[in-house]
Image (cartoon, rainbow, N blue to C red; front, side, top):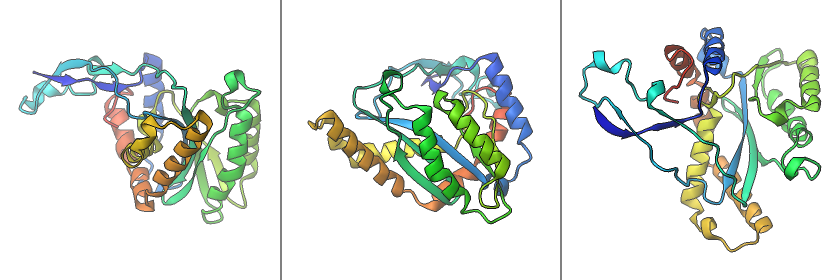
Length: 268
């Protein structure tokens, strides 16, 4: 046994693991080509210090020379060796971004502005709906007529607003320009099954490497947010279509990992 830094994951409850496993079992027979017809969407906050590290938590687990028969129940992502990720304190200067992609078909990464009428002035369902109306139909139309396209969004509060649900229900009933749109019921706490989460990590890594001067910028808050937004959009544009397609093609492995873990933590 050796001492390792604990893996960080969103904390799961028994019910969460059950729903994750049910989703994985339902979609385990989809092929890589099937997954290329899924539209992945999500939001992220980009802070001035995007990569600020958490305090280290150490756990004991088998090293590389441990016999395989001892490793099976003591691997890196077993429940007893994962560090539950705490909610991050929001920094004063942060930018809320939203993006989507489907295989090689890449949508925009654009800013999700706050709504003065919303609680604490944050993003609202109305602001989110405007982004959906602006960009989701355009991405769907890139598929051939007669295609069935699955749209994925997680269970964030702004996704569950009445306006958003009504509009998406209409889209599902009518389709878009001869394409069928199927809405996906996403399981809770499942960023490991959403390949766009990997994109966020890559974009933030590029942001920190290419724009280190923004970490101690003296710009006023509003000007700094514009600088961060421009920088993040540039980092998104640096990722090529093959990168996004490979992420979509990783879905069978992600699904298998959830099934193998019986709905609990995975390496993704």
